[in-house]
Image (cartoon, rainbow, N blue to C red; front, side, top):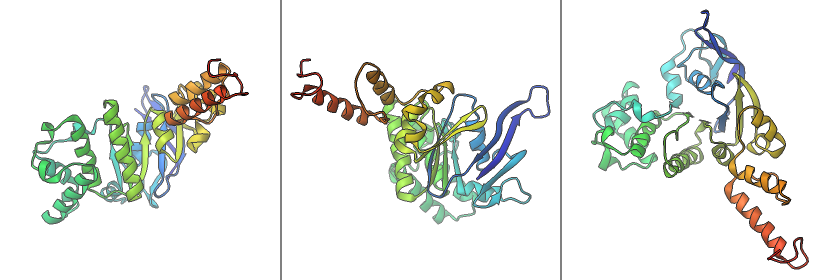
Length: 295
């Protein structure tokens, strides 16, 4: 839980820049939260507070009731519960082998060799990597998609309760993006891991998130279910914040401006396709608006 969090870079200097201005936010057990906002909104700054990488100068951050700004806080234990995956996480790979990289966290927890190996196997299999085939390979010899999965496995090997991902699909092609997002969705669904997904792709949060939080100017501007936050009636608010609705929603909006009568709650591509096909069939039906299929 984040309560009235303020943070400024270069605080106390003439060039101080306020990044967070009184942010309050709660992420429930097993919840999937999409965090969106324009560039410079404070998204990355906020998520770095969630596992103690940044300490709150004003306001409070709690993880399972533990105050991360308090004296004596065990940040190692906090970072075990809250796994943070940065943009381009593969750039953090450093060990000589995949198993050494993925096992770095468990070893630092004091697990013995057998326990660490079990964690490594479990985490690699969770992200779709063949343990026996890849465990002794150098991480940098793998493909880009495999390296990203190795980096994610290194976080999962800590068995986090919360998984925070800051633009995890940055730099990936469409197929790679889809694979990573499907993996995150499966981890959330099968393991009950709470997820905070930072992304600039509103289609992703429309499809995956149970709740969407919009940051703007270091403040929470909107917070609610995707179909409320991204709804047609709030499209103007999003645009004023520099955010575009999902492509499918914009397509439906444009068709409605041209006289189509499509549902206004469409957010996903498959919903748009279904709505358009239904409208075309209705136009082509005898006695319907448009008269004939050729009208």
